[in-house]
Length: 271
Image (cartoon, rainbow, N blue to C red):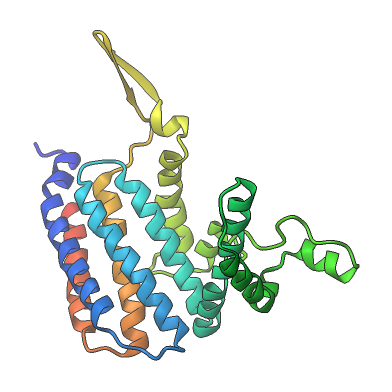
């Protein structure tokens, strides 16, 4: 009798082939697409697609390992950020690019505090650009301090470029078909986070001693095939956003791969 687990395992080579075809198509897009220098949204989508493609390649190399869930978690974070940016494409993409100066300022500050040498010319460049672009990232507390004439806190800027936590981004995202970002959050992201944060449920649910050896069996296993499927959808969704925005002529190729993926899901009993 064929068990569900054996059914899933038999479907892995087909999923790997679909993932490889998708990464090849995505890499071609990143390499060949041309766009105006001032199109911040297109730049952002290409940058995110490049990273998503590399993540999916890495997941294929980790075939059979629950660590694929760590990469899938990162891919979901990237997809939700991009979908949040898509609500006001160029403005939010420009915001993402401007946050580079907050990152640079924090890195220089950390170097100085640790006694590492700092390029003073670079430091001056960062300060100039931070005065120009950084105000939009001030926290409410920092804004209030400025308004009342008090000094700014040690780090007056948002934690990240969106000003939102990851669950808020997931809630604002709408994925393909009937899946919402929040659905993905509970179905995939939270279990992957347990593995990422060394939670006891992910590592040490039960101790299975065999002779002189000790093996830990987690209560909630990260299914590597499930993680690879999530990665496939993250790349496909990112590509679809880019193709729709630029009205490229390869939408049929992406649709073909998504349809093949849906057929794979049905054969595996996962949809």
